[in-house]
Image 1: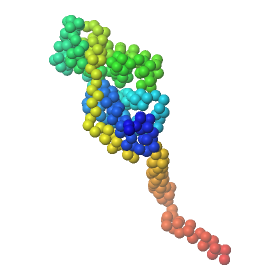
Image 2: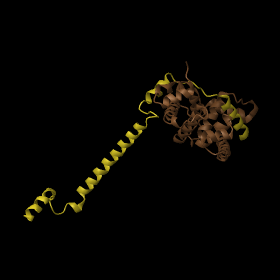
Image 3: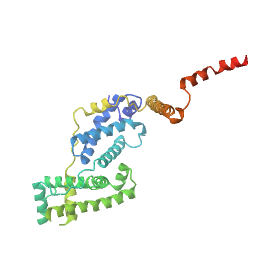
Image 4: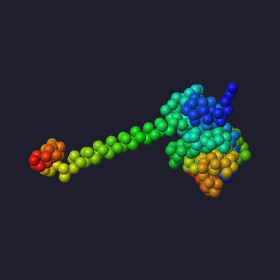
Length: 191
Length: 100
């Protein structure tokens, strides 16, 4: 008979580490999907996921069971991803002069006829990845959660541990930061 | 260039691309392999680890104090260490002789 989540957690807390395995199996896809939003290299994604699960095991005692385990785990995942972003602030100062041909073409198309530049194009997806990489960790986190994952401010506050007003302030600043980066991209391309 | 429109388009592009949720083969086994030794309910292990760390710190402090006492210039003047030790150990015997 399949054991419930609460039973598995209780067993782990009593010293049966093997009971942790079904939890890892069940929730790893979500942890990996979240980690892939912030890390590009597969080795980095795996490091994040591994760290999340080790932290989850270590702090399992603090899980009180008031909210679903998944929520508790996702909070830990988002915070681990944020730590990762803060520790890997690379390429933020580089210019946009090295855009690929398809990216430049898409941008050119957008300049000449914005409606013809499809947001489904692969080039647009590559471009947004470049832009996100240039954002500060806070801005990237808030843009990803708010604009891309379409989460509410309250949800973001719960996930990140920031207060609601702080999320709002950071969202405002993040949008500004993103616009600045996009302007720089346009300048690098056309000046 | 309309930056706001560009921002909207790029955000829409990012939304359209859901991240891959693939998990590497036997990932859970790898996590489990890293876990033995860190038991969340094992308070004794925590205490043992803490006490070992404290013991190691004490040894380091003792060695440093010993080195400082031994090499500090004030202690190098005058009597021989072995002579001082002998005098101290035999102090009671000397006192006994004097009393007689």
